[in-house]
Image (cartoon, rainbow, N blue to C red; front, side, top):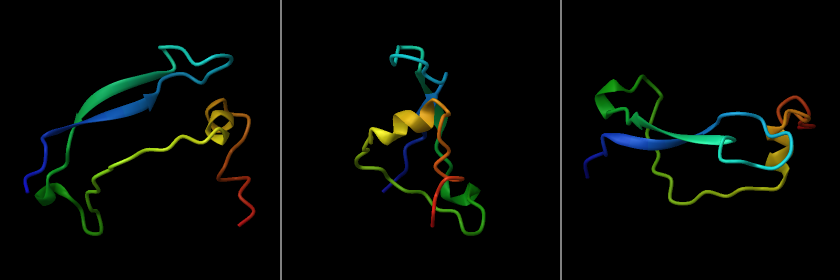
Length: 72
């Protein structure tokens, strides 16, 4: 199986303050790293599905830091 040359990446373009708009996210096309370009310990994963949890809205607007507020 050969790898694609490019991938689409969703970027948080601006933190939402009210409703999500067309400017909240942007999609960029970026090159896919080829196996010979990977560093030791790196690997490529094919994503088959994505999920979006309502809690992610709080993470996007910057009022909650899921890393700093993690009790574990």
